[in-house]
Length: 247
Image 1 (cartoon, rainbow, N blue to C red):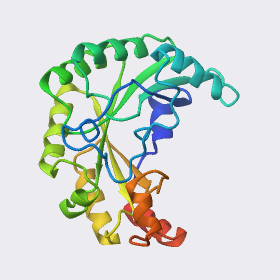
Image 2 (cartoon, rainbow, N blue to C red; image 1 turned 135 degrees about the vertical axis):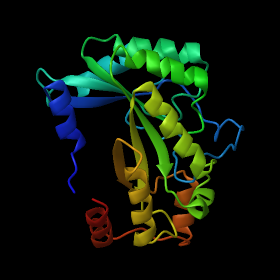
Image 3 (cartoon, rainbow, N blue to C red; image 1 turned 120 degrees about the vertical axis):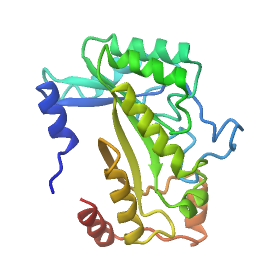
Image 4 (tube, rainbow, N blue to C red; image 1 turned 30 degrees about the vertical axis):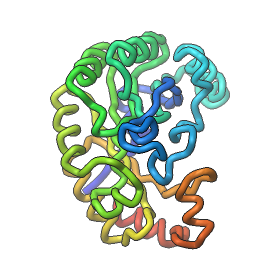
């Protein structure tokens, strides 16, 4: 069995080096606005895991231009992906989403759109918007699953059961977009075997997978658990071993 890195895939598809530019669309999350909870996921920062984006006070175009300027020394004649990263980027009225997505893909150097979101925030009308944008430029939808294990999901306050993810992947594939699934390695209480189960499950469904190490960020409930020594984090050796097995 082999795998293709994202960098290699993008070079093959677009014919050049491609960089992702994080964008803050000004959205919130059902785990923040009181619909499901007000605290967010246990590991999520106040910025909705969008710390690398520019200020949400700027327009999408302005954020992209500032993002391009930051990597201008690294890239020549390359292209970019507009990455709506902070909070839940399908959690707004369809007309609002469409306007922001269109602004992003309207920039000449943008070759694709990447949308980070929750599987439980993909209503029919939102899927229709995504399908429409995908006909203009390729769309990647990144789903924050983190784990397939319900006990862990409850602990991290994910807010939806696994079948919701399954349906979201099926619905997204019907629109023709690429689906990328995020898993977190090192969630409290999970064993290496648990993580491998999540990876095997996801790889049967998704087009791409993002394996990310658990980050304990200041200001999160996870950080408080860490300070009280209620959880432990992986050592470099443990993490490397798990990554190798997942791959």
